[in-house]
Image (cartoon, rainbow, N blue to C red; front, side, top):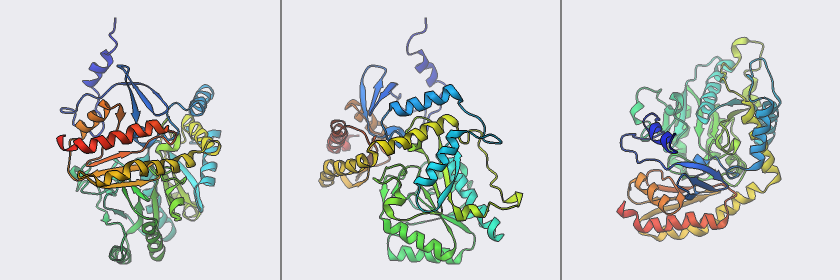
Length: 423
């Protein structure tokens, strides 16, 4: 008879976990069920989830509308290739995303992950210049503290000093990584770079919040400066909204909150509420026009096997239904106020360097480094699941989280401030 936990011990010998030194990593806790904002562990404990499975579970776990959509599509047709075939869920979702995103963003290319969505955006930008002007523009401008994925092209537009990708310096193409234009001198530096270099295809930014870089936040004025500079120099602007999209900043998209529309937008994560993998790259009508010609070589040559995955698209359509029928954006904005009320007082603690809140995102940055894995274990001992980024303890909960559960998270962070020096 197989013992209940044999899968865990045998699996640890073979599984390779993300962002982990497997030799020294403490054993992960075993989750067996989810519901709302709670994780149930194999030993019977429940944890309030403060990170929403890497920022995806905006509607809460196991929302019946999302699960019903997945079951119905599985019963009818789990997936068919989009090469030569069509199915309703992908076509409906493309239409709805075109209607939901700002400005003339209207041409939707589906992928399986956020990293690939960014890769597609980069390919579009390079090929756009070739198709339209016959120009070979192969470089990108991105920003210190930025993160856009772990595939090779996306690593090149991440912060080169960021710990996850330093080992690959010299392997990936070198890009222009500069400081965000948040003051006059940095705006001038951006303008000079765009004026002097004729090889730049696009500028790429995480709008309003740089997620994996430590929940660094900037003002809409930064994005307005980028839009104006790109327009002056004929360079495309790409918003990586894989983290910020679908209400995370309190508006449907960070572009909406900032009042700035990019030429290309990348979406993922909350697109399916954390139920299935799915991402999208959405281009403006003007960008798409450079591809929509009689020349076969002007076609975008990209085709993931699971592009437009039928179950994923069905769940995403159901997720958009929830944004229409349930007060998700109101909930995200209410979260912003609650997080400010609970966490802003922590800025006075000696151990805390900064407290930042934008929409349903909060970050408490500490003055000194601490053991991240020890911190994770400490939060679990307090009945919460919080996974710090370097010196930053952050929250990205489901928008539907009850107030008492949110208080459990913020109270744990408050207590952590008193003991962080011992970790």
